[in-house]
Amino acid sequence: MRQFVEEGNQPHPTITTRETDMNTFTTTYRYLATAIMAGAFGFFGSAKILKLDIVTASGGWDRLPESAWAAIGAVELAAVAGLLLALAPRLRALGVAAAGGLAVLTASAVVYHLVNGDPGGDIAPAVVQFVISSGYVIAARLGRPATAGTHRTASGFAAA
Image (cartoon, rainbow, N blue to C red; front, side, top):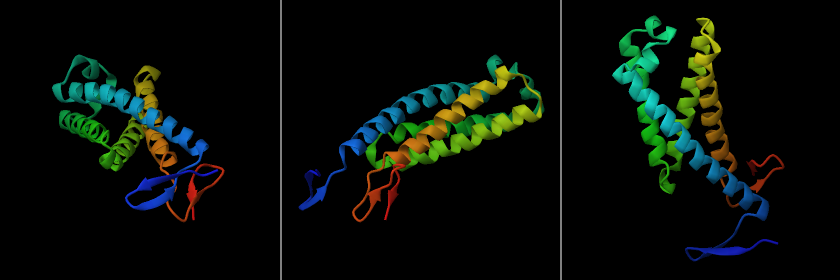
């Protein structure tokens, strides 16, 4: 059975219980992923800009110019700002864009480390952050309510 809510003066059917549960899950995931990504990328982005030992000690530091590392750090910090701003409901798309950019950045980092034969300890953080950031994008897509004239498919995606 569908329930109705008032939105303006137009009654709209709400989403089903299953979709409500999915929205709760995806919202919780987005908040947790934001906290994890903001902490990790905020720390490592700052470390790259400030040339802290935690990043300069890795073998990859010598293979790129310092300006490239600073630029990567700046991109990470900009994405963190986007993720934090996206906690406001009207700016949610900014978080998806920031997380998508971080997914591309971390996938590139994994390739960079693999091509250069770096040890697993240098690759693992990028893999973990790739999973979290791409999961954020997927969660945002799955948590989007169906609009008028659409319905949810068995996979959870809205279809016309």
